[in-house]
Image: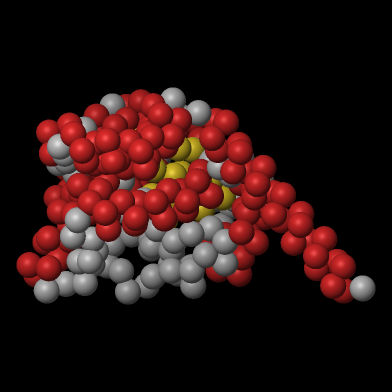
Length: 263
């Protein structure tokens, strides 16, 4: 099985990915790099999705095999044309999507921090996201990608607050989704102590409370209020089901269009 760990940038996605890897390793599933066109071979650590296409994912399924479970991380979008097929693969237990998310207000602050560091180091990564307006526009785009992955029937959604501050609860959910039994302490040690990205894991919760003024908080609520309430607050399935219905309706419309064009 291929486990795709999708996360919005600065949503705790690397921490969630490393926790999934720790769960799988403690359950006896090697997380060594997979020789597949689906992954970025130039990365030194872990399996990172270089391409989201049916051909690439089928190649990954074949190279992983039926008895191994491997986690891979991506920030890439799920194309509309793969939506129905991805649901089929998830139902067939060839694929499991785990989508991580975080309060958009804290994501914006982390993006601005990253932008500042990048400019100081002369790097391009998020360098343009120097203020709240630019960061919030990037988060709006990321939410659309998150909703596509997370609304697939059978996807597991992991909230940053749970992964970072109640990891045993997150591990329980991962175990249920993957059908494995993990050593919780070993999994946490991998994610919080041993993994190579540990410098990114010290973020405090609810940074926006102290770091945004009243006007900024009001602006963020106007822009992200529904997501904060429906997803971060309630993890409301209806918010995801609405998108799933739209996605499947689009697929049906496109299929009818192709059939009509072929006549």
